Image (cartoon, rainbow, N blue to C red; front, side):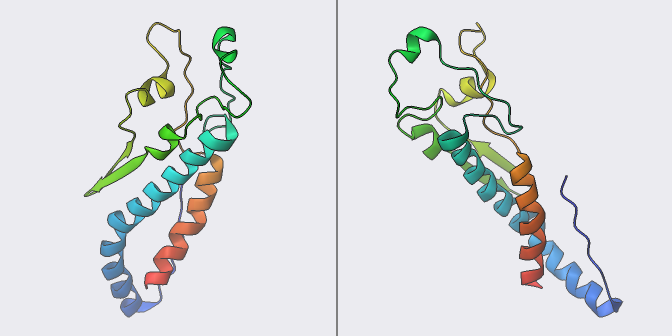
Length: 143
């Protein structure tokens, strides 16, 4: 959970904060969050081979593993999935995802169970910690 401590000194400071808050939240905050989530997800696919909470992904099936080389990772071969993420902010809603047809099945697993769930989108502890620093710094920079 992201928490921000804001100290106010007098009525002028409150008015200044109130005016800035309406600009910063939710617009600017959601854009910052979208950028950070996109980068965190991309790095997870390229480097980590683990979900946002650190859970290791199930390995490939034995037969599929025989078709992969050392340059291949579980969810990163050509980089198409990692490069496909985008977000869109509308009001106080942030939509995040990939238009690729196989993106959802990797996140949730196949219905028949042949492809295991390999959750890659989510808020990792590292992302949460980064946002704890990014949000207050960006907010204060605009005051």
